Image (cartoon, rainbow, N blue to C red; front, side, top):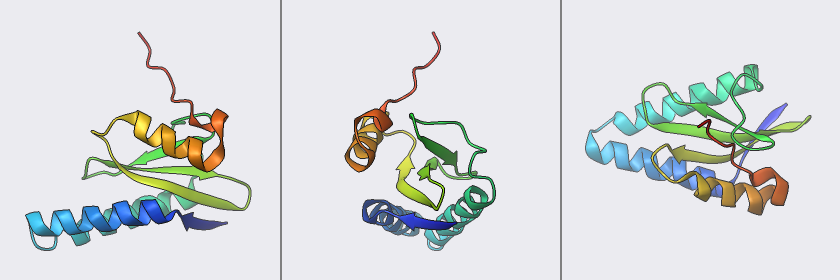
Length: 112
């Protein structure tokens, strides 16, 4: 199995690395290493994280308020976003809809 990263997710990662490096030199590189570790966990255990939508899952980073949003198929893992957790989930649902079609973008309901 391979990991493929959408260009928009690569951009999000690069922007987050730059932001954290501006805040504290070297912190962005720690963020990048944390993201790389999350990708390794996803490769090892692709079904370990809860579903974010109909066919996509989200793996949370340990030290940063980010998650890796991905879709698993038999041949690959497609990283759709490196998402900041305080952003509205609709933004990611829209990206899933654009990438996979209407049914993939349903965001799960929160229990009342």
